[in-house]
Length: 230
Image (cartoon, rainbow, N blue to C red):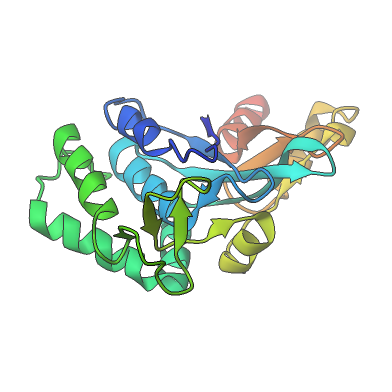
């Protein structure tokens, strides 16, 4: 799953559409582009909601690097992303907790999903929490972004996130394990060794330019290796 947000910041409707899909997500791709695609508020909320509503296992960060689109940046769990953002932007967790407490939704699954209509209300309440949004004028203090950028109608308590900022926020938890085209000439056994030697249970597969292709599940590969040995 792959999203990019334009300067119109029309990302929230995309999230609302995903709330009603009941399929489980192994991973979602967050394309940081050149640094004007994702706001910290949106990354936080997408992470929390997709984890709760779709059982999201991993987030894959990609960007635009030296003209290469979807250049692999790293992998993290939703919990790692959520709490790393909460450390840097504590008002995010406060606004979400306030919205959740007001609704007190009933939990429906073991990964925490709630009624889709309640989830939509949760998203809207989060965004209109006074810690998250303010109406102009005047301009709020530093740390607020005017939206949309060319015709400001609302101020959002957020930062635009580029790769360097995300790597700083996720310092110590971002997994950059990957296997590339150089491994394809190896025997199946040596390819399996390369993958299984990587950290984490999901490993990125990239092409010769570093462009992200897919995630490889190490647990499935281990099962295949064991079956071949029996």
